[in-house]
Amino acid sequence: MKKHNFSAGPCILPQEVFQEASQAVINFNNTGLSILEISHRSKEFVAVMEDARQLALELLGLEGKGYKALFLQGGASMEFLMVAYNLLEKKAAYLNTGTWSSKAIKEAKLFGEVNVVASSEDKKYNYIPKGYMIPTDVDYFHCTSNNTIFGTQMKVFPTTPKPMVCDMSSDIFSRVLDFSKFDLIYAGAQKNMGPAGTTLVIVKEDLLGKVTRQIPSMLDYKVHIEKDSMFNTPAVYPVYVSYLTLKWLKAQGGIKAIEEKNEKKAALLYSEIDINPCFKGYTATEDRSIMNATFNLTDESLKEDFEAMLKEAGINGLNGHRSVGGYRASMYNALSLESVQVLVDVMSDLERKA
Ligand code: PMP
Image (cartoon, rainbow, N blue to C red; front, side, top):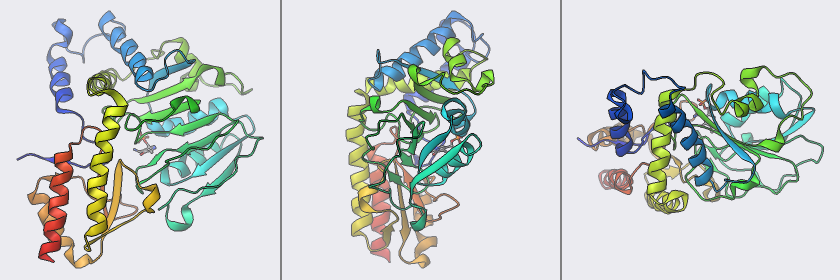
């Protein structure tokens, strides 16, 4: 039975990528060797790393603009501290839009003063704060473009004279943005880019080398840049699968083409949430994420029926994050419109039954 995978991450990736990636486990690029057993210094793998780094920049429109792409380890959570380690001399500004922003703030406080310019904690992070000011005496401004748990997404980014750092873990490569507005972007791979195990960091080189503290080599972006993202053994397989996914994205027509599909999927689901009296959206309408849609039942007594119907339809991964409950439909790049239609059909069947 076909599964419709709405999991929040690790999550759905293109079937073509699974095919090619599984083949490489047996025989990588006709080397007669598995990708899992070759040296990361082999010319075949070095080419994967180089092409993946280049393709990431190309897809974001950042080639030739002073940026470097790195595939690091430690998840996006490691970037919470690496960002501060490398950039925070005295003070940084952070926008608090959810659990992940809060975790980034907690780490940054280990390195200097943190000015939380605005927070949506007062309403359980169901909206994106607006109209805040970014002070001029900070080293950088940090924000989270898409709040995976709560289902909100920044639609506009502030104009700031200070470097802008963004955690794009759950919406990178899903929508067109002027990525050159950002000085550092990071994203754990396990949503739109690949499996868990590697984190993409896009950093403008002229941002680095300004803090006075000593930085341990593994946590120093400059060291990783100098070593072409091979300072130590990289996460070979996650990087390879991310590379295949980026190639798949390019073949789909790149970010612009995928954004159109993502918008259609999100519009289909949100319109059902809005017209179906059995459901209520969790977030402020204008801040709705096109990646993660969060919603609740209006009558909890329907829970058992709804969940049985989801199972029957082959729908996987719809439970909300354990901290919020309810439901969350993650509609990452590889999820088809047909899968969203299956979910919407189940939702309207529930209304008929209720
Ligand atoms: N930031 C965001 C927006 C996330 O959704 C997540 C979790 N997937 C993280 C950071 C933490 O990522 P990781 O588990 O890779 O450390």
